[in-house]
Length: 486
Ligand code: BES
Ligand code: MN
Ligand code: ZN
Image (cartoon, rainbow, N blue to C red; front, side):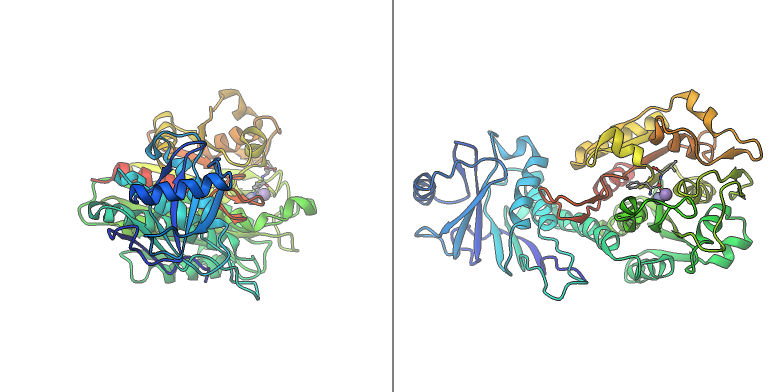
C-alpha cells in the first residue's frame, strides 16, 4: 500500500502551541506573512525572511528555525504568489500547498497555520497537502518518505470541511494507486478482485461478470478486445444506492489494464505509459467509493470495462466484425482503437437502468493530447451534460474544456461490411472517438464523454501531482454527484 499521511485532521488549538515538526505559514510575493500567529511572532518571522531574501514567489518555500513563542520545531513558509487573499484562487492555493508536501523527504508531522477564513480555504489546504504528500511505494526497496501527520489548524465549525476534503483526497489517491500498479499484477481479474474488496465495509455492491459470461451474453466489444490476452476480460458493476436517492448517475470507465495496440501493435515508445489505460475505470470506481464515504444522497453505478489489449494467436484481427451488446456490428479496422469497443458494451449496459446522467471516462485518444495538451481534459456529449461536467470541473479545480461534435465526422465510420467501423481518419481524432461512442447512446439519454488520455498520467511532477497516475477526474465526478444529490 502506498504511503499517504497516516493521520489527517483538523484542530482548533492555537498555532503557536501546536507540537509539530513543521508549522506551515504563507507569504505573498513581496508581501505579507499570512499566519494565525501573534503580531510579534509574525514580525520576527518577517525579519528572518527578509534577512535571507525570501520573497514568497509562487511555488517556492523555505524552512527556518521556530521563532520564540512557537512550540513547533520549525516553521516552513510557502510562497503563494501575487494574491491578496488566499480565498481568491483556491486551486492555486491547493497547488502551492501540494508543492510543499510533495517536496518533503522525511516522516514529519506538519501543521498548517495559514488563515482559513472560509470552509473552502480549510478544505483546499487539506486537499493540496494530502495529494502532494502521496508516494507510490509498493515496488521500491527504499520507501520514499512523506508527512506522517497532517493537521489543519482551523475553526471548529470547519472540521467537517476538512474531513470531506480528506475523503475526496482518498478518492484521488485510490485512483492513482490503481494506475501506478504494473500491469503484470493489475489485470482484469485482479482489478475486479481489488474493487470487490474495496466495496466491503462500504454500502457498495459489486458484481463481476467474467470472460465466459461476456462471451456468451453478447458483450462483443469486451470479448473481442480481451481475446488476445491470456488473461480474460471482466465487466464490473458497482452500485451505491442510498434509499432516499432521487437521482441516478452512471459512470462507465475504460479499463484497459495494458494497451499494446493488439495486432495493430503500437511502437515501443507509445507503449511505455499504457499501464495507465485503465485510468477511467480507476476514477469511476474511486469516485463511487468516495461518494459512498461522503454519504451523498444520490445513486451511483460504476461500470468498469476491463480488458488487456494483447496481440496473441487468438487476438481479433483488422477486418473482423464484432457485435456490441444490443446488436450493432462493428468492423475492426484498427485493433488499437479498442477503448471505444469496450466502452460501447459498457454504455449499452449502463443505459438499461435508465440513469438520469451517463458519464464515460476514458484514456481514449492520443488526439486529445494533440488538441489540449497533457493537463486539460476534453469533454463532449449532449450539450447540457457536457457543460454540467465542465462547470463541476471548474468548481473542483480540475482543467477541462468543452469540445464539439461536428456532424460531418460521422461519415468516416461508414463500413462496407458492418454497421460501422472502429477507426477513421486522423483529423479531429478526439471528437471522432466521441462520435463513435455516440452511436451507442439512446435518444434522450443525458451523456458526457470525458477524454483523459493526457491528464490521467504524468512524467513531470508539478503542484500536488507527483509522477505517475494523477487521479484525474475523480474530483470533478464527485462534484457532479454532489450536484445531483439532495
Ligand atoms: N489508449 C490509447 C490512447 C492514448 C494515447 C492514451 C496516448 C494515453 C496516451 C488508445 O487506445 C489508442 O490507441 N487510440 C488510438 C486511436 C486510433 C487508432 C484511432 C490513437 O489515439 O492513436
Ligand atoms: Mn489503443
Ligand atoms: Zn487504449
